[in-house]
Length: 284
Image 1: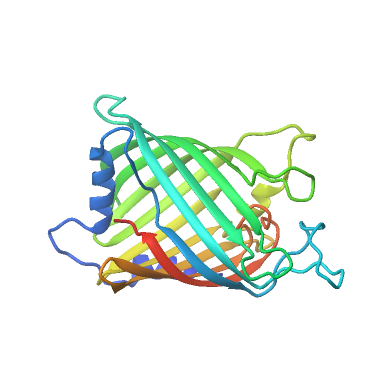
Image 2: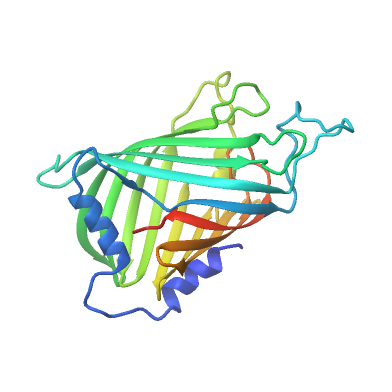
């Protein structure tokens, strides 16, 4: 079940701190709410890592051939994430409700491939959202922030075999309890005509929601993500992350992905990948 057991453990088993000072998650979310408009900040961690995938997916790359005439992808490649945000407007709804533009880009680079050395896949994800601070209590958790918005995600490709894109409306509930943060993010896909839909079955693989959990402990952050948990055909998406200090402000990251949907070109392909790298920015 991938990351699902860790999500449960983080809620029920991890001892939670009871310090009076604000947790890393409160500082992050409150700091975002106070941020000036049109100033950029990290939306999520930004990183570069070397990765190894157990079984690359050659199907979308019919044009990639080696000197032997066979389609070939290296198991090892570099992975980058760039995640930025900027506030567009403050307090649009009765002194609450900030309008944000966010942008996330994830790239997979076949750096060590002697035949191509090309970027295998890049996913682009711009979004616009309204963010509200709240103080509702729920099962011992505080619903600290609610986001609602529109998101487009694509890989910028053309052609039937590798073009991928979809548009969604989403809500996001961010719940805090001391050093634990939970995020529940359901979405609804906007329908497309049959002739324009690059991936009509994408929701069968990426699901209709995303669950994330993060726990901060002694300058380390443990994270878990799952999508499509209850799918009858077991097309789960799961990711585990661990970030930690190395020296001064330099931090390392370890990431494991298992299941479908790691990238758009592989949305219907089961991936097993481990990566190790460095963070350019962490949550704070």
